[in-house]
Length: 203
Image (tube, rainbow, N blue to C red; front, side, top):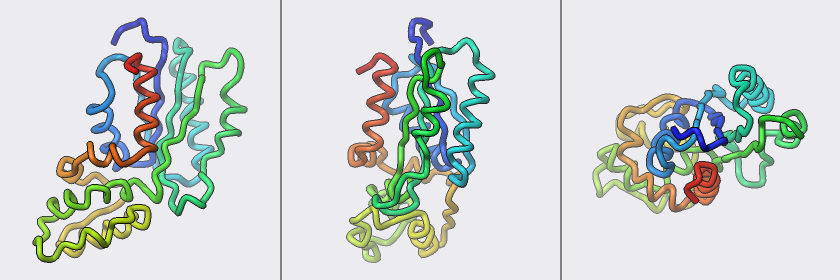
């Protein structure tokens, strides 16, 4: 990684599913070895503001040499867009963004309703992974992806004899999906990656 880039990213994510998903997105859309990225698991969204503050404090204590840190927090809204985000950005900004602080920005990446809702943007890939007979497929049922969530995905898995547990790793599942299609149809994801690319000096 070139030493010329003063920026670094602290990427905080909700669980193992997010870890796998964003790793693949970063591989596809971020130039390699142009910025330091450290990933930390939040293990769920309960008390998320407190958890994020704790992860930031720990990162600052362990990396006193870094002085342009940009924090990204990827988590689920767990409701419709009318539900207020759970993360208190104003409180975090008050505590961590001030003159002389190493924290420059704190950014949210909110999946509505959850990350699994984004995955339904490639319903054909989900059906293919499940080896669902074409005659039994009903992709139109999931056209409104923001009406889907991890529970609906879990039920669909069970229909075809498989198990999906939110926050757990699913071998081969994400590899079966068209992540470019999901990316192209998810503005929140595009906005976050565009910002990261600018930090990398690529855009």
